Image (cartoon, helix red, strand yellow):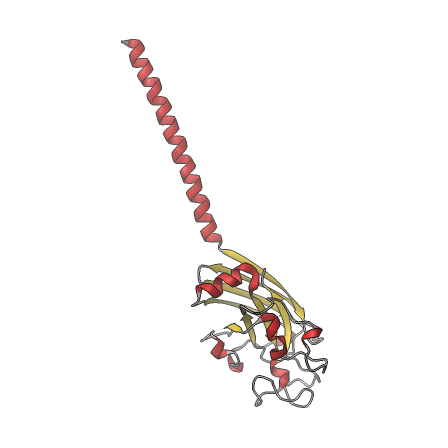
Length: 216
């Protein structure tokens, strides 16, 4: 009887230990999953100058589902002037920043339209407040200005399209910052580059791309 009792107790102990180990393993797995969900998808872009703008910068975008936290630091921009900035993506685009071969008219200046085959259409307007859709692409009064030539942008935005968000998470999104004071007179005017290819009521200085980076 004692042998039977001891054998039963031993077997029960083994079962209990196995159960504890399984519970611990499942707990670790759940913790890993929760950690992954909490961390989200992290993307970074090194922002390189376009149009010999003498600019530089970095950007980080952290996705949690369809919600994204966008952080941008850019330097060497036209001082105290607004700078439109967007996230671009197009299924038919090259998912990259434009190069000299995109200067289709050979005037040694890249316009926003000339760069479109590389980075695609606007998917998000990185405004400081209000709407962030493509409809706000030229909302000059709601884009950040650059005191001392620098911008720090920090905002949480939402994507309505899961397909677009997925493509950007997969490295197909491009950040572009616009605005170049070509003649250095402290304002955007028509003197050096004429009218904008996006809106003839605006000078090209206000909309020509100054910085570009692919989110990886």
